[in-house]
Amino acid sequence: MKKRIVTQITVISFIVGLMIAVQYNTVQNPTARDTRDIWAIRQELSEEKEHHSKLLSEIATYNNSIEQYEDEDAENQAILLNKTVDDLKREFGLLPVNGPGLVLNISPAMELVQFGYEIEPISPDLLIRLVNEIYRYDGLFIEIDGQRLTNRSAIRDINGVTTVNGVSIDETNITIKIITETFEKAEKLYGYLYASTFRDDFYLDNLNLSINEAQKNINISEFDGPLSTDYLVENSEGD
Image (tube, rainbow, N blue to C red; front, side):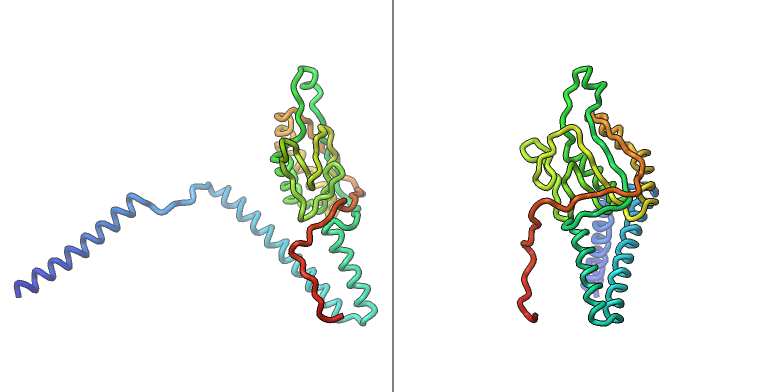
């Protein structure tokens, strides 16, 4: 009987000790908490919802194309297929595009030049930030100093020189062309860029960023260079 009581006390002591140890560990190593404020979380949620909405729009577009293929006869199917191929070529940069948009001009801040400040070409980090914001606010196609951006394009620092598509952007006078889906979206992008801090960011690098008003027709040339096909495999089956 006495041995049984000792065993029970031992088991209870072990459980109590284990609970204390777990509690102590929790106090010493609390679970990491999200310290962002509510507005930062709301902003991230808004961006994710916007991305989700774009994906749904793309799915709806592809579903509509499939329905058109199924409803049309063979001749019209060929016409629709060619149109889809041309749309994809434009998206990948293989064809020139035109439409509403706006033009940005980057140039040296002349008042700083007169005071002897050294003017360096735009840094890749600042250019990448600008491009990301343009895409975020409905920019469809972008051309930087004659270089068409595609989903395979890269903006890098190579030996201290900013490059786009492997071509050096070593001039301080740069023209950036942007095409949007509609003129209204071009005006929205203009308003956002004009109200943003980008002009101040460029001025800190001794550069001026001029944001021209939206235009109804802008031309962007096709991608001038080889496109990588490393991950494409030819399907030899069928005709």
